[in-house]
Amino acid sequence: MDARTHEEDHRMRADAQRNAEKLRTAAAELFQERGLQAPLKEIARRAGVSHGTLYNLFGTREALIDEVVTELVAGRLTETARQALAHDDAWEGFAYYVETICELQVTDPAIGDVVTGRYPDAARLMAVCERTYAAAGQIIDRAQRAGTLRPDFAHEDLLFVFGTNALLARAVKDTAPDAWRRSVAFTLDGLRTAAARPLPAPPLSLEQAYRLLENLTGTP
Image (cartoon, rainbow, N blue to C red; front, side):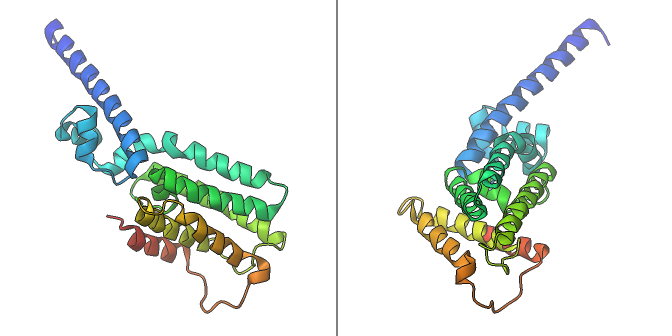
C-alpha cells in the first residue's frame, strides 16, 4: 500500500469513527425523547449523515440500540433497585420501586421499552432487562416475606403493571400527564396483603408475559 492509499484509508476510518459517534449521540437523544422506536431516518438526519451511512455502520436498529442503551438506562434502573432494597420497610421499598419505574417510563420513554423487553433481538438490551427482572424479584420477595405484599403476586405480574403504565403514559401525556399516578396508586393499594382476594386465573409464565407485552407495546 503506497503512502497516498494509506492516507486515504486512514481518513476513511477517521470519518467513519466520527460519523459513528455522531450517530450514537443522536440516537441517545432521540431514544430518550421518543423511546427506542424513534425513526432511524430522524436519527441520521439529526446526526447530519445519510440513512445509508447509519446502516453501513450499525446495520440494524437493534445494533444501534445496543451501542447506546447500556449507558442510557442501565445505571438508572440499577440505582432505583438499590434504593428500593435500602428502605427499612419492605413495602415502602416495593412501592418506591414501582412508582419510580413508572415515573421513569413517563419522563424517559426508553426506560419503558427496556422494562417491557420491547426489542428481544438486542442482546445488550435484553441483558439489562434480565438484570432488572432479577432485581425486581428480590424487591418482591422481600415485601412478601414481610407479609405486606400479597403472596399470590407473581414476578411476571410486575410486567403487567409496567406494560399497562407505559400504554397509559403515552395515551394521556398531552391531556392528563399525571393520570398515571392515580392508576399506580390504585394498583398498589390492590397489592397489599390486606386487600387480597382469591384470583380467578393462575399467573402467566415469563414467556407468556413477554408475548403479551409484545402485543401491548407493538413490538415490530
